[in-house]
Length: 244
Ligand SMILES: [Fe+2]
Image (tube, rainbow, N blue to C red; front, top):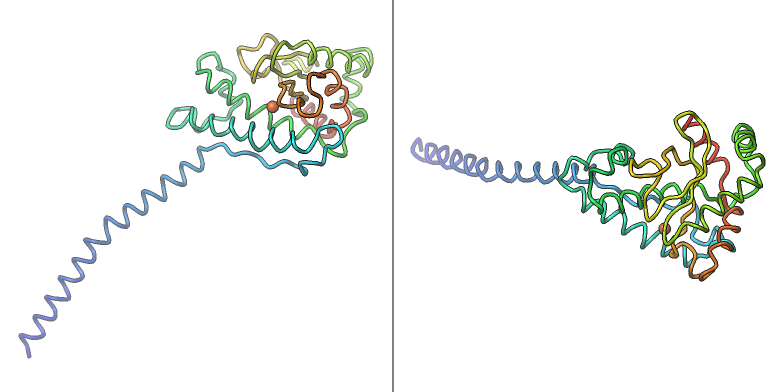
């Protein structure tokens, strides 16, 4: 009986040791995997949801354009940005910080980092309840800087219409709190050290053909005229206050 008990105890010990030995690497692997996934998720940029339905900006910006622009173009910038910065020092850095030293980084980071940031702003400064004029301090600052809101509209439209090829027109606030209208090529923006005129964008319009071609074809000025009908001035004013 004593011998049987000894055999049972030894067998049990062997099973326990075997299980421990088998479980340890499994646990470690599971923890490592979990850690990697969590870290990866932290590092990855993600496509922001549109703050309204794809057809919400009709008739000024059509549903199909919004579907492709947000779901395909913006998604591609996000994916390509993640691929470009994966495993580098830029993976955990805010885009605004990267832009300050943009000239030191690759074209892939510049084009896709800019593409992601610019479109994120673009969706937010539009609204189906937009249009009209700003109010309060922003309207006063625009009137002071450009003589009138209408003059500002003209200058902004001209910046968008005359930007050769693809790019963006912007209303920015500089370090002194002054407003300026400017434009940038491709997916550059005024936060980048490579921009001719630098400052903090509070309003921007995408003048890439992918933003308007399905509805407006080559009529970029008509698209720019209609853009005013969807500007979310509450959001632009909020950004104006933040930028100052
Ligand atoms: Fe775009």
